[in-house]
Amino acid sequence: MQERQTTIKQLFANPVRLLAPMEGLTDPLMRQILTQIAADLGRPYDWSVSEFIRVTQHVLPAHVFYKYVPELHHDAKTASGTSIHIQLLGSEAQLMAENAAHACELGAPAIDINFGCPAKTVNSHRGGSVLLDEPEVMYDIISAVRQAVPANIPVSAKIRLGYTDTSRMDDIRGAIAASGADWLTIHARTKTQGYKPPAYWDKIQAFNSLKIPVIANGEIWNSEHAQNCMAQSGTTHLMLGRGAVTRPDLIAQVDCGLDSEMSNTPTLLWQDLIAHQIRFLQGAAKSDIVLVGRYKQWLAMLTKGYSEAKILWDSIKREKNKTAIISALQMSGR
Image (tube, rainbow, N blue to C red; front, side, top):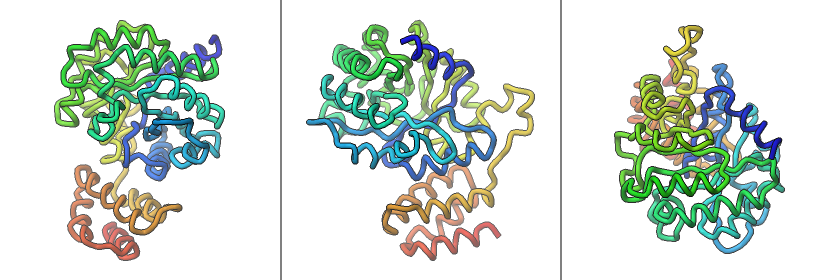
């Protein structure tokens, strides 16, 4: 336990900046691209969290963990050196514990537990944010995982402010406090509020009485949002989600204005982003159809951050040929 406490103290010695787990978005390929960009800009992510791995009826075989987190083959780090924590989702405490222990055997540096996913298909099977209405189950899961994994491995949880409303916040906080979680990430909306602005950063303050680090998440799209989030939430630790996909240089922008030495914060221009997009389209282990679909998803998000992306999107949104898309992408930088 002493080793784990030292590790956590080191992890949170400075304000942390994390890349969020987003199902169907921050998959291994996207993690590789975004963490590489962050490293190239001189402000690497402190760590990232995998998409959730769903636990249902049995201990998952190794190949499932490797599918979601191929970084396990490389010391659980991306090529740029960013550590990847394993996120699990489920409702059976003992089964979650056994899968967490297996993930650690495969090299997971930390285990995160998902109590925030708002997807109907997940919630209907008692996974994700629906468990915010069952704080006692949350406690059972976190404490079982904490007991099952090696003492030096951190266990964290990611939550929303509640399921349909915030009426259970005190109970949720109590469950987290008693569970042995090493830190907590909070998406500052309820499940019902989904991803609709605004995020209620001020409500995160209620969790700052916990004797563990608290990380704020939700609706951080630029430096001003980051500063407002930190001021309202009372925590300096941030997890970046859709904003980091829309502007891959967001990680280098969030602290702009807080540190005089960052007056010349590096910015990723569209021309600089083209090579990363091409590398995404040339990703291994995915068919061209899948890659084109995933790329269009990303490009649609980039239109919110780059005017050039909107022009490119209008020209290729019906294009299915990967080679043609790469050609159009190359031309967009001229």
